[in-house]
Length: 353
Image (cartoon, rainbow, N blue to C red):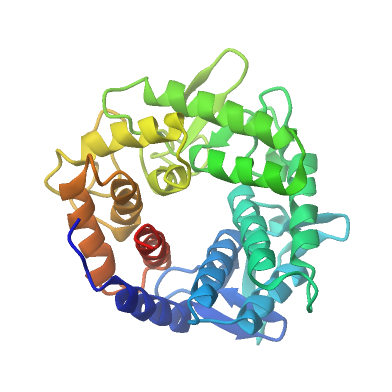
């Protein structure tokens, strides 16, 4: 693959991202997950991304343990309760502090997965004998994910603790939460075999959803029970795109590129085969491959870039073009697109090291 001055570009992107999105409050640092022009908002998804990025940057000397600890402090201040170590999914700003409304004291599973992962990474980098026992905190999160979000009858995590005992939502799965690499990693850290069960079921669901169409595109949400594995209908949770390859499912190629298993490789290969035939990567597709917008977004391009560069031998043209876009495109001010872009930049460069 052609070489690109990648390390300096990643550093530049990370510095821009951190100055734009990492905010200080009276109770630690949070990542501003609000849309451009809106009042600052913290969400657990953004906190997880920020913690992962900070650890990765610290490994290169571009950030430090102090900043990571300030992000940890914020998470600790905004756990659901003393008995539930999952993070409340959303906070709003009042004065110089961030507050969780009563209705928002529930978790979003994807955020907690990333927060736990980042803490284990911090333990590997710095150890757990300092201000925080990173490993112990991560263990607590994983324990409570199994306690509050794990549906044993379908061997998967629900989208949040509020959904576990809801007939309407208990079988609804966010497909970008199907992260076999994380579940294998969590098993290695905890030796709890439930994580292997979740890993196996995640692979099964990925394989079956991928086989349901020619494109390999997966929906934002899926209905999973003992008899059914199918895309969720529109308006199952967030809106009309719930059954399309949209703003949640776009993360799947990046998530699956973390693993070298045959299932994840094959799932990504099918998706990449679809995208290598496209002139442009658009934002939002039907599962049959029809674009539903006439614009693109780095939120869609960046995860494809990670997957294509992992499998660059078979997708060299797509890998080169998307890598160049990720590394050379300026941040836009859209939190989600910018964050996925910087995450992708780190992962792509790590493949060269």
